[in-house]
Image (tube, rainbow, N blue to C red; front, side):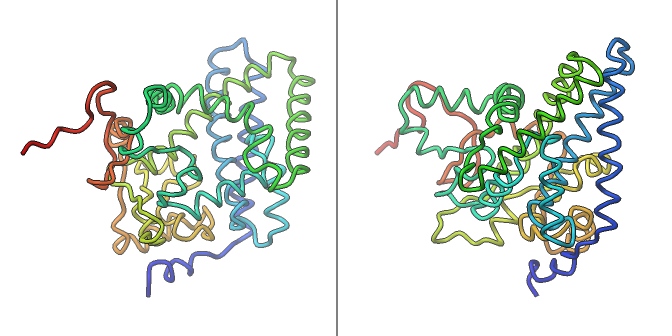
Length: 328
């Protein structure tokens, strides 16, 4: 049997486990946000409250992501309803987010469909052929400031009010999402005053930055798989185009086991609450790429995919030749 066939044993949804995963996360989110907003003049309550709001917000995003795959609850209707109701807390319109993320899954490792990835990657050949302004733009895009601070905050605050493929996914979903967001923020102001929005904004910046780091590390390691569509193999792309983030059990808890990303890409029907056990059961056959905290820091150096060496590399010199001249 293939790994994908073996994984189907774990693609079983359980409403009780889903509720047990969701409800405590919601309680923590609202409790932490309420304490931080209500005691914003008390630093020893404010700071932990903002951090816990951010962490629980990231986890809610991962559970909404499960709903989008139809893998959280037993019925599509329940997944869709919960996914929509979570959208103001994650700042992610449900149907558009689902559509765009499923495109990422469908095109994992496909060189011709890199626009479907969460983070765009140029090849070395493309970079070499690009004009100076394009190189500078890509360098700015690939900077830690853009990818992990400025960019994610702008994405969730502004771009997701009308995200990519909004019309195809359904305009009413976007309208409903933005209306729910307005109700949520309005309720926050009514309960705690307008300053509570600043507290929420601080948690948003933390959550967005932390959330952006996850897909970057998962798909930006040195030997990540990319291939032309005519030779690309889906199972290889899923297992070798995604890494396992080995940051320990607390990280797994905070991110609803999204760390086991190779298995998730291979079979997105596996619920987050079964993903870790599935990965452990099949780990000997998976031979996963594991990223430790030290490895994650090394990932920041990888900027371009070199089609000759079939691996990620750093930026070459901005000016002058990027490859050595062949001698006769």
